[in-house]
Image 1 (cartoon, rainbow, N blue to C red):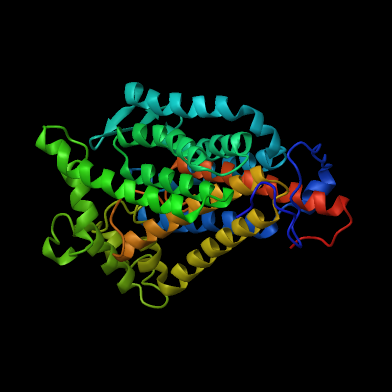
Image 2: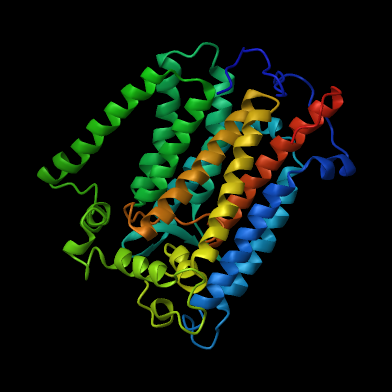
Length: 405
């Protein structure tokens, strides 16, 4: 955690927000980027393309490389966005805290009016080139707006500060739940908690918030059906509970996880290869290009492929946490903390549901699952991490200290 008025810890480069930001030349910027973060993100995109090449050849008749080509385009555009955002001084975004919050709310609310319906959910707005999911962009906008609010208003951390931050975050959570999109709303909640934690919220505040959340969830499940109001659909409740007893209904609610575990287990050490991947090739594995793409990696490339993906994810999270510790100011630390914890939560839940230890919530694997909105927003987030990293290294270099790793 990085409190507001604490002295600079050894090896860190925290500076006041009102200090003029250092200007980076092109050469200086290239020396300040985090190459390991670039390797992690580009490596995950390459793994995604390899998995999509295996699993989607027969999904679109006459276009065996439909998903691979589009995901490749998203990856190239995402790298360009990451580069562009990383050249921006992130501290200047603080002055747009409330406009960013307004854009987030309006875009999520707009999907409830103009969004297309798919499988009972209204989450996407159809655009000429791809389906835009505002709730994905909302993850990043929530981090930026809530981090700006905390820095602007926080002098001493009291109950009012925590309550205001939670209320600000709960508005988009409720809008996303109305779509309905339980998985993304949980990511929002985790992002709110991460920013509060990095900002220095007392443990007792988290205890009270956890108790209130448990009570609210219980009431939301029990009370609304008694008065004829649907909050959680039956399929959502089945997905949340089927992983506890997957064998009780393997042909219905437990089918997806059962097939996923079969796929991962059959891959063994080095995988079954492209030709012998029966779970993927015979289409037993559902949502093999989105929610369960990690199972595709497990069956096709085995333990070796899964280890590579998990190593790249570990590298991504490690660099995010490192950037959190070297941020030049509190605003940068909050941004890095919110982004990193959101990514970690998505990785844990997605891979956890493929191996049967987490419920199926529809959360994609960052940079691995197919999807333009998810990939582009993740690259934007990584670009902000690069901006925090570059500014921190430049600040240390200008003060004549040892370079940060």
